[in-house]
Image 1 (cartoon, one colour):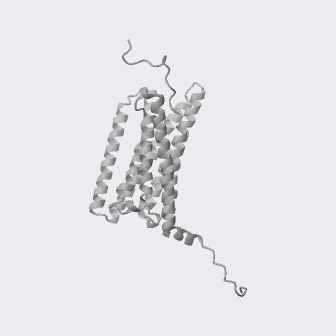
Image 2 (cartoon, helix red, strand yellow):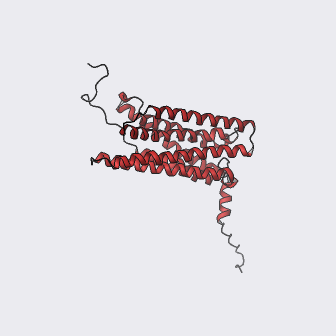
Image 3 (spheres, one colour):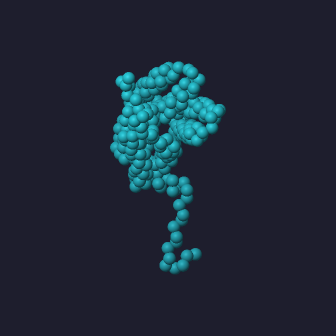
Length: 285
């Protein structure tokens, strides 16, 4: 019995009730989406600063793989930042999958560049031609974007559940292929460096760099693949709705924000400034 004049204490909120309360709260939804926008904005700013630093230090290098990688990271994270900053407006677009999925495709292309770079190093070390790798990279990406555009057009024309499932499974397949690519080419380069006979500080740093980046990218793309499979068949795991903000937060944190932050930190070193004695113009005699 309770004392006279005292109201009974409210019952504690159960875990499932708390989850539903947060998911159904407009304030929580906006807070989580703005938090994601802020995190993506910080990564985009960091990548843009890196591009400026590389350009300022070694402008004569042109558009190297590192500079293009940083620039693509800026575009991908900037796009995600804008999407989550205007998430409610994005939900009104038909179909909203175009805006939500496009940065994910660009994320795939951005990190596939690392696998391409490692594959080129591996081929060069074995004395093999690398021209086919880069042209194959462009061709494969062109086919991927063409298929995705076709799926978007079909979704716009006839947004039935089976087409939505097919579109999500396509992203899951891409993520799985990216995970395999990092495991294959990252692992190949790692063991090639490990067998390299000369012990040096630079070799050890590169060995750790390749191993860490390959592991991070393999895990993030595999996690994306698994989550997209759940997303395709389970409405409770739907990421394209406003009332699953907690799921959105942890999904994007695990598959994009944390991996991008860690990889960009690991690859933060920029080329040393060339000395006059090291630089020889192409037209010098």
